[in-house]
Image 1 (cartoon, helix red, strand yellow):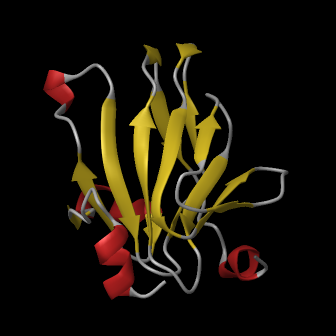
Image 2 (image 1 turned 135 degrees about the vertical axis):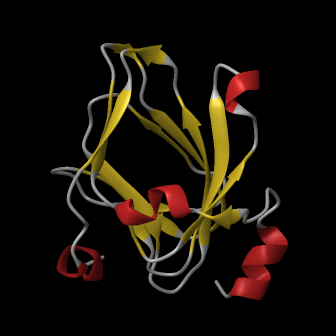
Length: 141
């Protein structure tokens, strides 16, 4: 999906360059918070990935509760859990990521992509950022 078409369909907006987490991404991503952390117990943001952009493998740890929900908004992307086949992401698809599962997500090579990221509240939650998704792994998709 080209940028012009993507921008017209990305109803929550691209947001600003995701500088705080840039070191955990290959390519550029953008973050548009939909709620303020201090105003809601659930943080939600629209995350936009340029074509080919993906985050590193990572785990949302939690003693109880926790995890993440992805609500696909615009464009086309990938989601993959360790040891499983990648799942194609399209607008309207919802991915529920249980806590303590190693995974990654991002755009397809030829498309911009955005999803709403919902951080599920829990006890003793923390994110662990791991290795990059290699070009070799990614290019097989």
